[in-house]
Image (cartoon, rainbow, N blue to C red; front, side):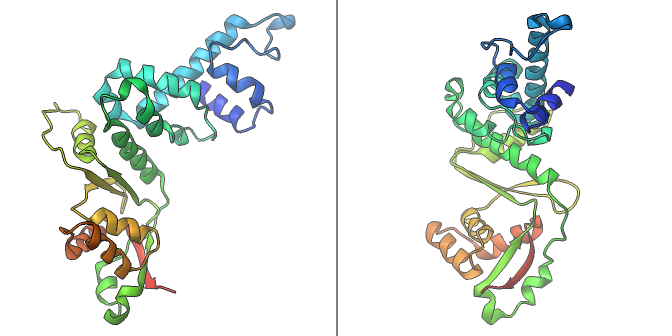
Length: 266
């Protein structure tokens, strides 16, 4: 992926002229930039086209590596065609290759030929969250006894500090089930689940974990991750979901290592 790394450096300003070089590099409809020349100042159209193709292929390969379940669902041919359009539309903005593709789920959501798979963009969001969790900073997780030892009379006002790896993806579709079925290499059977699902993505130790949340736990955790108090988060979840089980949600969040600390709100 050397070519992709070079264009990432160019976009980040390493070449000093990304505004002229990068657009032509990613769009085959553009002419070879005048600043690109071969030996003795001759035109370098063929060389530039080869380099242009290598960059595009490298970026598509990066997307394929970051979104394997998405590619398995669509098939490689469909995925690479879709990824090619994304590459042309969205040049990289960071010299770090794993950062590329952050906008890919949103692109999938509006991609014309993916409209028959409305859940596909949420599967991609889970994969992107998985990758972000994988690269997140290490931090100790909140031990269960920290919650039980917190003063009961002030627990309602307590706030939680999120673990750097914690991500939440809420979907109107069974995206977690679809993600899990297609992340493995085994055969995928018919998926009968139809209800909405939300995913909690964490990396409490060395491995990234993806959990399907019980009803209402997504609203509860979303509030906590937004620095709302424990009491407010529980009230919001209960109001939105009559099936919400606070005790079960606490067990899930502690088991997942979603937070690092609990403290008094101010």
